[in-house]
Image (spheres, helix red, strand yellow):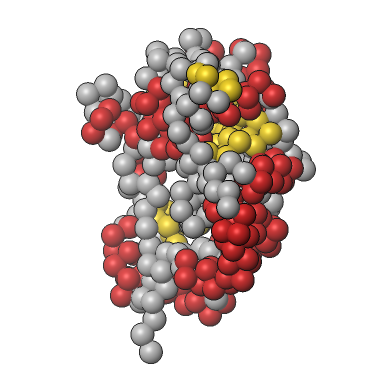
Length: 366
């Protein structure tokens, strides 16, 4: 029998959520209201409550959520924003749209998250207007440690939670720590729509008000424009309803993802493969990423065994073409090292136990 295990399997996910999603779509079709209606209002209330935040503002996608959230925090052209370079250029897309200047911090080799020590050095040098903390691969950063650095300097922290829906530390969930936070609901996310969708979460009434204006032409009231740099970035009612139908299952899905990750971390035994530690609720296993000294050989071996893999992410942001001229002589040692060694394994709730065993056995026999 031919084995094929994809890096993800949205068909299985669709089958498992079919009834709830169809009911949600039918509810919207019957309402006759398709943009910024009751479903959007309800999702915003429910997801804000889930995150432990005062406000959630639905937008068209996760990248818009980063941009509009940063704009609401007064990040503007020329603002200097600390970020990592190992997270797929999404924050850089937003910073480029704003005209803000990236200041790259290296990452910790084990967690792959922003180095707290390097962030401290950058903040101490001064001249920083904001920090974007990306909870990469589903691992919630130590936000208390981050805020101990940024708060005395008066630097706002923006959380990129696109891969960390539901991750928690000390009873607080991703998105509830910073001045604001972005979420993506792209179909492959831990909580995914059936198309693009995103949200900004914040504790601040004023920040939420600004994002609501920025997502809809800058309107103060209908046809009265108050905010510059706005756009049409509205979350439609169908996607909102679909997300509402899935939200009650998110904790269970995250638990299953952690179970899979724990099996990998405890059962993969290969001298040339490094696995992440076993984490608790601070990790929702959006991606399970190993490191090895010969990635191409391992990928080829796993492909021959019917196992799909990917690389998240192969090129540091400062080596991407739009930034090469500005960062020609720049390099971050840990970021560079990881870019050549990391490899993503399948990790999603619908992955079957025997498939997990096959993946583990195939790596151990490499």
